[in-house]
Image 1: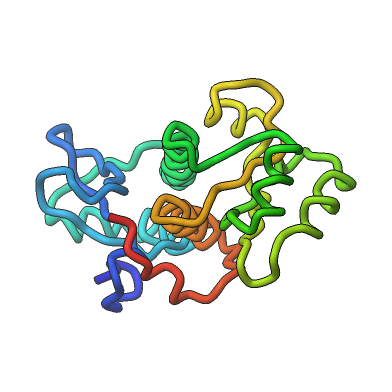
Image 2: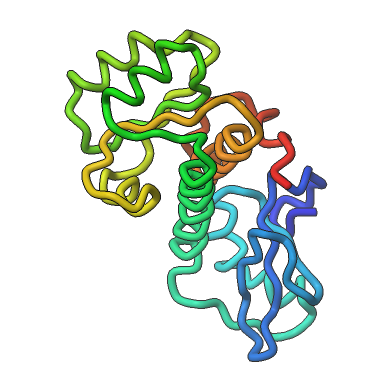
Length: 197
């Protein structure tokens, strides 16, 4: 149950927090830290409300310190989760980067996700978008080139693609969580309920 709205939701639509031994609210996005948890809807505005209304102390039944910039911390952890999945897909041979390799994966109909760096040139994006099968390939413009570089462990990753499969679905769900938290939901809310374990 969300401590702000008091509504019961699927875990994928919530963020779990635990209280550290030092009495600090800690986001537990993997939902595996020990201790009693309190839940807040996956919405930055509702997290702001939980902080302003001191709902963490009420939820934990004890005085609870809030780290400065907690919403930014949650946002950063959500992004890191998604980038880690992208890195894992690359290591598993299910993700490619570079215009030619992405173009090839799209052309063969193997791609499920198409990434463009937020700072990519529009002409390159348009060329690859034309190859993306409508309804079959999800286009994601969420990460800067430098973030994609880190995920792939190489410089200048402007475009990337992830092949169809379980990792692509987990990555899609992770991206949806980032967008939902930021208030930029682009797909149906039901997408959040895809299993990410």
